[in-house]
Image (cartoon, rainbow, N blue to C red; front, side):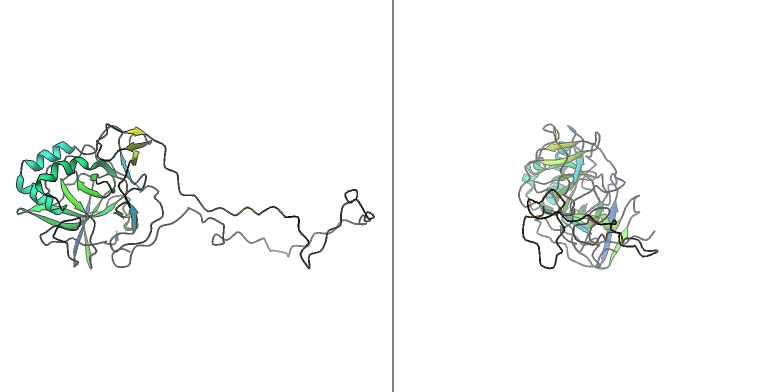
Length: 330
């Protein structure tokens, strides 16, 4: 099965993006496809994920604002329905994650360095994050722990993966391995590593960009009831409340013709005779001796169908996404 690789893993030691001092450098390498429960290479901790779901197809999302060098679509972290979960159940055990890290100070320091924090800030930082599940395959820079240091690598996380996101909606921790996450890094000559899962398409992969301002409430899809949940930032499910489904983006519709104004007849337009009994003045016109004959339709011709490219006519299937960037996807 031909699947185009997206981007590449950084095999050198050091953090990547997101506030750490060690920025991943572009270059050739690998991109890892990671399923929901796989720990992947060099996990920071044991799994703290409560649930691992899967999604056979990505949800409908707003039209992308453009392509990136490492994913087909860019989606804002505040987008309603971008994430899922279960009402009153956190997808990650935040307190267990804190315990795993604080039991090993070297790991805490390495974890903190990736996210631009100090070791002492890690517990409060983790409690400020919101546990959710990805609903679409997502590109990130993942970080394993090797020889006392964080090691950055590029990855695609499968829809259904439990993560912790910050107050701008950006994934920051992968709960199946305790690894810190940062935004992806563009790479050249990528090589895919791992087996694509059913439904995987490079064109469906997204990268999450930060919301313009802190998110006041996450609108997430309830994977159990198929309803919708309003979850406050940093909440582990206790503050969940039901909410209405987000409104879909309006579809283009054909314009409604305006009512004919009472205005003088345009030059060159033939004036229709006034029916008898409706005009206050003037003689009534004589009725025609024969009924008017409709213009003949040429043999074998049928009226042309409407063009979906014409103004005001929606294309079938709704808005389509943009094509993957030629550099890393195809």
